[in-house]
Length: 271
Image (cartoon, rainbow, N blue to C red):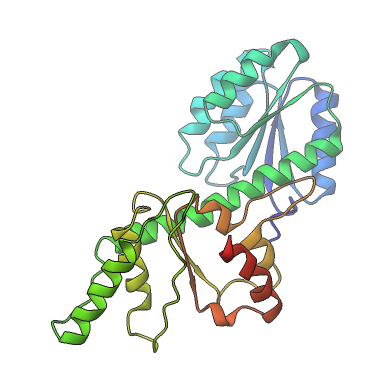
């Protein structure tokens, strides 16, 4: 699935203005989305309670509904095991509610009257960011389970020398004005290159920041450039490098990247 499309995504439109709600659903359906419409908080809650059969990836939520405020639905959304993204739809004079919704977890908001093409662009961006966060969250969760246990086994002089070298690299000065140098780790498969990278991260100034391992050999070829560097345009999406948030990025099996991408990656690493 391409993160720049909404094909095969499920969308719950919550708006009591029937023609407008149907127009939004029709426009999104044209791009391949599976849409349902709810005109009240009650019917929206019914739709959310049936997530075992139909689970929304995105909720378009009007702030003014016949039986309450759209804000009242946010706790129901937050209670879901797999929380959908939320785009708030608000009238011109109702911006305070949109701001409050953003504070409570909504991803973005749009003002009425809105352009349906703009709606599609914002939906693409929000869903793309959700996909990236899910991938990064999985990587972080997996890394958290292993990073604290990172250790080089053995007591031989060679292992002790490697430990000392890793500690010396981790101790190098690392500031915004003068960041620590990039590190190239080489070795045969199974010799502990991943562990060495984690030990450098744990011992350095960025230990409290994310450690993101990018397996260059398994990135899908059709989206590899966008996955690394992000997408720019009407629906900007950050890539895995930017999502590391000034932490540590490990490019595992970097030689498996296509040559043209290696050339593009070089200036990024240099910066």
